[in-house]
Image 1 (spheres, rainbow, N blue to C red):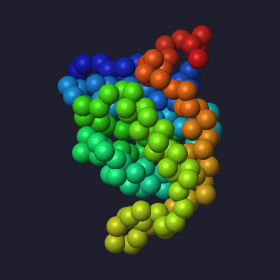
Image 2: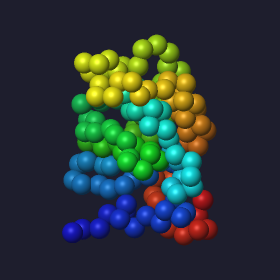
Image 3: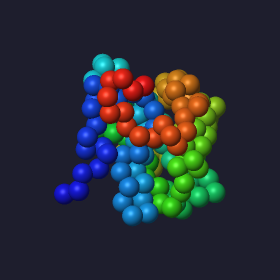
Length: 157
């Protein structure tokens, strides 16, 4: 099996941010890390679930929505994976920034959160999702393509 950058993550030094987890032909997997691993501070299930619903709704409205392969939560509750097809890193970084701004500004009914559309419609928390989005926006506000590589030593920030 071919190793990918995500196979060599040192979770002791991984910081919040956006990273390239792997590239498979024309599909890039981005690691959107809202929480530092193993630090005891994790996304609540309800905030995670709400972010997922709102971000997916945002992605479906974008110009290149057809280039989105997948967006979903990490089981560690530290972030999300975004898989894109044929999108530049710069475009994807801006897409992520815009998506989290959309969540931070969002008011109203959570998209697709009714009994008929959601398998766990009772576990959502919009205020928490908005707060997590705002905190993450502070982390990624100056993020660029040069920041997409996973850290490899404790001296890297």
